[in-house]
Length: 174
Image (cartoon, rainbow, N blue to C red; front, side):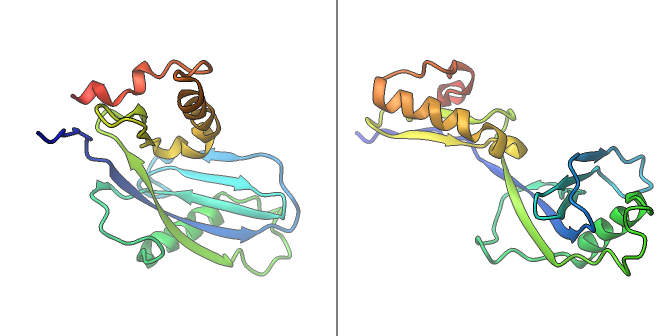
């Protein structure tokens, strides 16, 4: 008899981003909650130590991802909306004398979503030595180190000591 594992669908949310050079290195991230005047969604601006500003926002609806990594299609309208929103919200003083805030990089990514919005972390039921750590949504980069430590403890010591993995168990969908 073959074991079956019920892994819920992990869908994706597509979000475009641009990198815009800044005339000086900034130190504060800025989050704009749009009332519709910037577009349908929120704008986030993250400064980078190299002087770039990473700008993203206005995500698409949740979907089953069919695009292959590295072959994602850029949506010109989404990129234009980001650039327009950045131009509306950027400090005129900061960018005075700079001809344009033209992005040097335009990109898109998907973030993974689980049905209940919580990541899946822990052993795969019925499969000895197999573990899953996925579905962290937009918080993957932030939660990655703690997830890695918890899974390392789980593998090496048989249990995670740094984090209670019960809320993230795959068994919640069984």
